[in-house]
Amino acid sequence: MKIEMGFGQLMKVGRAIRNPSRDSFKLLENNRLVDRLTQSRICLTDSLHKARFTTEHIRKTGKGEKKYVVGWRWRERRRRIVMKMSRWLIHQYPASMQTGLTYLVLLYTAAAFHCASGQAKCNKRSRALWYRARSEHEGLGLSDAELQTISRMGDMKHFKNVLNPILIPRVVGTESHARVRKHLVDTMDGLGWTVEEDSFDGDTPLGMKRFTNVIATLDPDAPRHLVLACHYDSKIDRESVFVGATDSAVPCAMMMNLAKVMQAALDKFRQTRSDLTLQFIFFDGEEAFHRWTKEDSLYGARNLAAKLQDISYPANNRDGTHSLHRMDLFVLLDLLGSEDVQISNYFKDTERWYARLVSYEQRLNDLQLLHRRPFIFKKRSMYNAGIEDDHIPFLERGVPVLHLIPAPFPSVWHKNTDNASALHYPTIENFTKILQAFVADYLHLVF
Ligand code: 1BN
Ligand code: ZN
Image 1 (tube, rainbow, N blue to C red):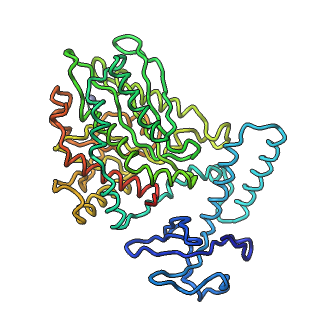
Image 2 (image 1 turned 90 degrees about the horizontal axis):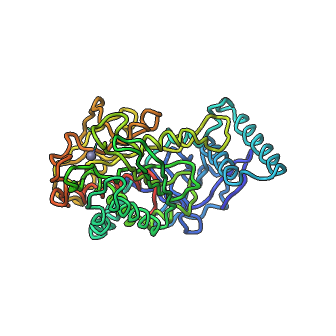
Image 3 (image 1 turned 30 degrees about the horizontal axis):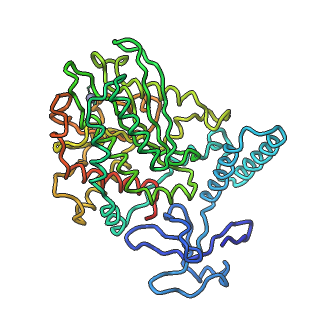
């Protein structure tokens, strides 16, 4: 229910159920869950004493639940309105000149509305509100019950089913490489994601090669992306036997498995038409053909980062925002699947997100939802690790990065023993649960 109040303040009246273990609320209207609210996003009046609001809309407290009047904070409300308008504009564009004029008027109104609040100067930066949302974004905070649900959702049989077709040599340009790519595309397409094959020709020490990144997006209309990424090519070797189970067949399978086991929650999330969505990037050509250099490595990542930087978003905007700004956070998975895995925090500016991985591993462990293993995510930082990987072209362009790679590298790294026998399933299962909790937390998923 929406009620127009006071100086145009838009209020929602409904039931807000407080989750005792965290600072968040489930907002219900007519017993239907309409939103999840964290404290930072709302002002919340503990029922009747602020009765200048519509007391007639507040009914008596139900058992174990409190009634609240919930109103968006002014800042949040303004952000939502401008977001909605800009999203609408992006989708309708281009249109006829006549509608273009209407857009201009609407845009002007939105800007005037924004400036009139007096809380922010109407400067160039403040116009790209969708972009600024990433620095204000907070995780939801999952309850113990939600962690238990995530743990129950796990499906290692599915994990092995999606992993098996990748456990083969997949050197760029070979038939098995194309077969693996088809497996990625078909799997993500089958889960209802929008899949794009981003192909280009690149010059390598072995001549021109065709590379294809696979980009799968849950809701391609959403401006902001939580990106999970890995590479699907495997390193070339003389005997053509190198499989790269940890490098990076397992990360590819972990991502597809996440999309499968969280499908219901992700579908529900897509229906909310949030300004945020989940995107998977399966990079091609991460490995060097001859010897790792700046030119001979990261073919797919270098090409995509440069390309996205050149695509202004929204189209023809005057803020200077481009498609790389759509990446809220770029989470790169690499060298995962073996038993000897210790991950550290490698970047200061994404430390708050790394800390959530540490915290979810701790809580899942306390709830006895993990196999008894040494912790994967260490409470330590290695800011000067300097590990070359697919995140580099994005990091260099200012994208916030989380690099989920063990240091030291697994003992099988770039050896022919990096195959199925190097894999340790209890460790893999623990990792998948922590990653799934992280994604649910970031996207504010409802189970
Ligand atoms: C990671 C997995 N890398 C290659 N396969 C990147 C890398 C290459 C890291 C050389 C260090 C040295
Ligand atoms: Zn490698």
